[in-house]
Length: 390
Image (tube, rainbow, N blue to C red; front, top):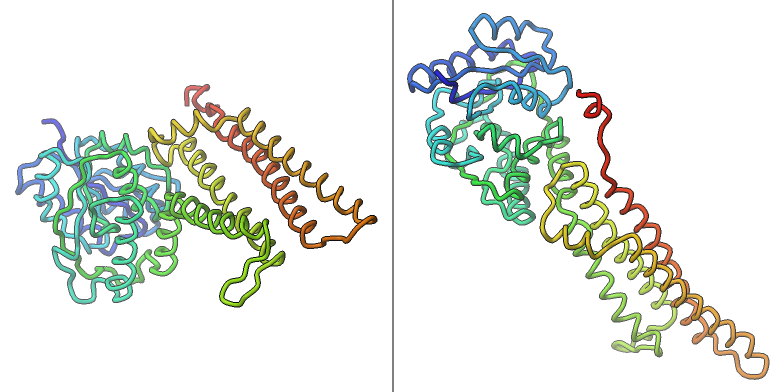
């Protein structure tokens, strides 16, 4: 009989609870009539977890690369099932009740997420800071940044078709793997569904591998880096617009706001705002180009249009144009300064022109250097292992 379902469990020294998890999963397969297997992605256990799994009839895949994501990825790549359901091997998830996941997968879902807040969280199963602070904030941020429908962004039990998993082309090896899966599925516009699931108290006597503050920060950092528009582009645009609007007014003359006199000193900070905002725009473009090149995110249609519009040659020409503007302003300031021998030296006017000149020259070099870097990131390269057939 063809294998329909592979139940995947990452494992690193889980001898205390692994047998219970495997037994529950196997009982589910027998009771439901689903043809399947239990597959353990072992990350180098030294407590006999591998022998426990093999003695119970589970298949073990040795994954030498350490990390939660690496263990799951290595196991799924060896899975025989058309569908996979992954869950921690600490006896916190109920492998005896996988019907909601299987039914959703059979119905066409490509990623099925468990929702612990709908299914029920047993007393002591989740620390209060995770339940009331970490998970709600990270899940809410995920919905805002990526427009995903998921309400429990970091639930550890989830199902997916193996074909969808291959399309996701997941790259991270640590705890970020969980976030990357949801983000990639959302960006690829996959059919994502959410089903209730329960969370029991960790069955181990030792502390869990999860470290809430460190791993929470890693998830948050990953989500922000995956969303360069919110991290770089939007703040950069707002900062640039504010600097241009106020700086444009100050280039002409002193501005008085509510009795406060804004002059050359304020103009310097406006130039700084434009410079930093402009860097934000380039950082958004460069980080997105890097993410696409490394396979972290799929290339969107908008990104393809930007690729066509922002070229190395165009960037070099734009940079040279800004340098020319800066040089012309420099000559103007120099002529005013040298001509002051025959008249009154207007220090404020010369300072305004010098600030504009310095800003234009700085932006010009930045455009040229960033265009060169962007061109490097877009190079099509092939890994030597592919050339060697590895």
